[in-house]
Length: 411
Image (cartoon, rainbow, N blue to C red; front, side):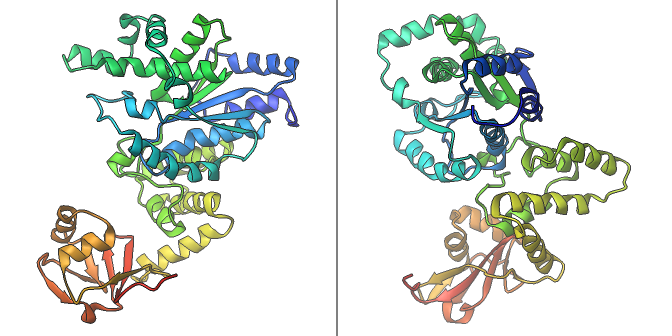
């Protein structure tokens, strides 16, 4: 297969960090079969572009997919442009809003570059599931529906809870696991990886493959990364994310804000520290021989280096200390140009930071807006733009813009 790792070496890497391997021992069996055939594994990961940014929660499974690539296996990345319009019901207590094809395509276009930052360029297939799902006839859909039963679908935890609570479950949501399963059939997946919230969907793929005479895929699941709020899984809709393409200073600052109880999980799932290092970190934090702040800094530096190159983490740490220890303003603050002569504070905040006027009002009322370090609390305050030219407007702890009067220069 062109890789130099033995099967035991591959298994040690590929099983690292897994929550489950289903069926048990299935990965070993697949590797032996494929080695005998002289072929690489086809390893599927499906992502629905329901948002425009790739965050560290997504990166957990993407990094695992890359490890398969490093062992010489083919990564089959499926962009769910069709299934994103259906909406994955996993973990949802109510029916999701359906996205338009235009919204999905915009999200997909924005995500692809970030996905490529994590995965190797080869061996890689990028497929859109509208390629096969969009071509299905009514007869095909009925045939697919006949492959499972309502009772089987209600075994799914979120469906069963909603059914017991008399909450609506649409038929289109029932179809989602089957559509994702059809992806596995279409690309003849040997392995599918996903978060633990995808266990039902990925096993449905194995079930459908068996019913259609294909060898069943092995399912490899990984733990879900909790977001910066320390409570919910990382999700753009909850705003508790660290994006893989965020600037180094922003990435480091957000990592430093996570609750202490998440440090070990971020070392293991976000930075992929070696198992021995993760275990040593857990012990050191437990017996207080290592301070949580110092541990966060170490994880933060490695995280920034992972996405921005060696040395970027140390530079981000220095910027962090300059900003928060010395109460300074970060270097290289981006500029925001104002073409009017006067501006109301709430409109200024909304325009500069790209938020709604209601969100801007909330930021001001909570004391989260500063101009050159001075808190601004009067949302109706008017400013002559000439007076604030060159000033630095700050929202929260890490968002800064230098205000400039006039029209932005053409670059």
